[in-house]
Image (cartoon, rainbow, N blue to C red; front, side):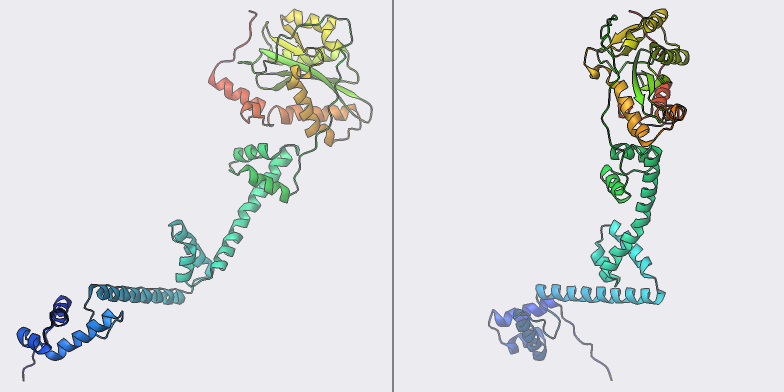
Amino acid sequence: MTTRKRKTFEPSLKLEVVRMIKEQGLSVQNVSESMSIGQTAIRRWLTQYGAEQNGQPGIGKPLTAEQQRIRQLELENQQLKQDGDHLKKGLGLLCPRNEMIYQLVHQLQKEAIPAQQSCRVLDVSRSGYYEARRRSAKPVVCKLGVHLKAAFLASQQSYGSRRLVTAMADAGLQIGRYKVRSLMRQAALKPVWKRKFVHTTDSKHDLPIATNVLNRQFNPPAPNMAYVSDITYIRTGAGWLYLAVVLDLYARKVVGWAMAPSMPAKLVCDALNMAIQQRQPAPGLIVHSDRGSQYASELYQDLLSRHGFVCSMSRKGNCWDNAVAERFFLNLKMERVWQRQYANHAEAKVDITDYIVGFYNCKRINSALGNLSPAVYERKMAAREPIVVSEIT
């Protein structure tokens, strides 16, 4: 007994047969006889076509292109659903912890796959994923907080958010200023408050006054071209202690200082002599100060003349002409003196020397120096080109 092979027809042929009957008015019998197709098959195609025209899938193979596309999409959707089910079953057999799945979601998110979609496919809670991300970020924040506090304490509790950003960057930790502010608030880190600065200049004298040669030119091109000097007072349990300093404007570095319980002309001379011994500046150096009696004294002027230095003095009542020295004293008092209660002069001398040598010159960053300390700035500039000293012009 032989088995007849079942005929198969392409959807395009089926659709053409249906159109002959529907559009051209041919009978089922005529089309069946003409094309050697069974009437049962033709009637089944007509039923299928009618269902598709009404937006229904029908029970046979789709005839129209639209229904064929729908059927194809349905099959693809079914396949994707099966693949997803298999993936979930596979993950279930592996029994991964949620933390591992959250890491996978995070990696997929880096590949531009939304976390919501990944969580749905991997059958994990989206809120659980975000909570895990927050927990993993806490150690980083904690680490930043520790380094921030260390940098703040190293600055003698004087750095605000701007300088702390630089200090953190120097430690290899990149962090924005607003984040620094937030961490400072959380750790209750507050720089010491400013206080009113009191001047000690005694300009009511009949001694000769020099002109303002410096004229606020606070950025000389090389070291040992322009110094500024000034005097301030320090409160101690044994009475006032007076401090005279000399700064090289090139790197804002303190190159000479002296302290005494009074402020005679010898005090400012001692500070300048220290600078001369340390730096050995050439003749032509401009040494600027206020119009105080110590700087106008014969003793101080003779010292300048012996070394060929040019004397420069601020204009009357104009503290801005000596702003760099004034700013140093303000920093000293904010960052060290106002945080201490010195029992005597000796204790104050030790602490102030420590501030100048151990912190200000070698560690304290200065925005005018590109956020470098004076010592680091000088070394960096010296590596670029030879140090140039001033000459009388």
